Amino acid sequence: GAGVSQSPSNKVTEKGKDVELRCDPISGHTALYWYRQSLGQGLEFLIYFQGNSAPDKSGLPSDRFSAERTGGSVSTLTIQRTQQEDSAVYLCASSLVKGYEAFFGQGTRLTVV
Amino acid sequence: AQKVTQAQTEISVVEKEDVTLDCVYETRDTTYYLFWYKQPPSGELVFLIRRNSFDEQNEISGRYSWNFQKSTSSFNFTITASQVVDSAVYFCALSEALHQTGANNLFFGTGTRLTVIP
Image (tube, rainbow over the protein chains, first blue to last red):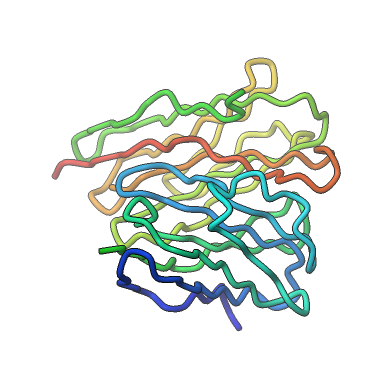
């Protein structure tokens, strides 16, 4: 596609439920990033993919968070047993290769009630 | 250690004033890239500029200009004759090309919220 696409745009879920957030990067981009942004805050790094592998998972806040990327393209971020503190906007970005500018999707606003 | 520091949390200016957003970075790599992004109220991050570590020429794009100084590890962003539409959060970012293999290499500052008052 022309840009990075994320779905859903908004997700409201009950505490304790699992959620899946999807990111469709720009075609041909090998690097993919997930960030989290709480209201009025900066970007919190979650995970970075190079191709299908995730060499850096250092930002995942707990073992309830996991992510995968298949076919060097679509990525899914899964949050299990959601908690209220997981409420935030989850942003995905992709770049052609390491060091190039990253382009961001519009984000998924997650609200845990 | 914080790799990108944006010391100004919030700035307010009156329309048509010039404003400079500061960005100081830290890296041991000799090859790296610096970026500025804009996040308007709509929320989507918009890429503004990429600069590599070997090119210290200042850049101007319309009302926007960037001053890259390796001697002070700074990459400041100036908006000339600010407009209300410039109101947004601006993020500076660093990418380390030779960062340890496999690790995340795209680091963001905490952002500066710019408000342009009409």
